[in-house]
Image 1 (cartoon, rainbow, N blue to C red):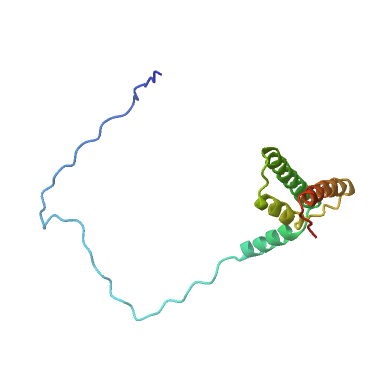
Image 2: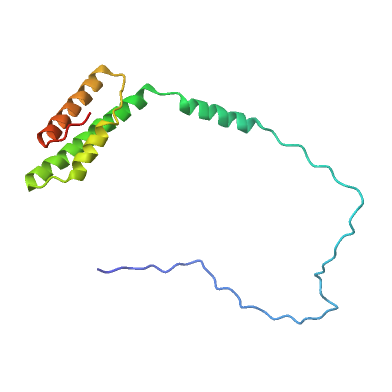
Length: 143
């Protein structure tokens, strides 16, 4: 594999560091501490707090449930359960079912999410029924 590089043009080199003579008479930098005044300064007032109200409104908006949120959660729940059933099928074909896999399915069945959509809820219930049947075949009977 050949990698070609192109030279970068338009760059110039930097000059080195130049030494200057240290002459205390010609030094332009100085440090001095100003005398403290006997007067105290008052603190400035707080700035505009409108940003806090905007954050509160945003947080309230996030708490409102979107109808699509329930559907997404139900779809994810159903798809995750189908994935676990596919893995169980692979375990069965290999001749060894791990108890951890069965426990994951039982745990997942306990995390049911309702979507509010009758059709989607019916599909999820069918997936749950299939999972319960497979668990029953293997001697696991979840609540």
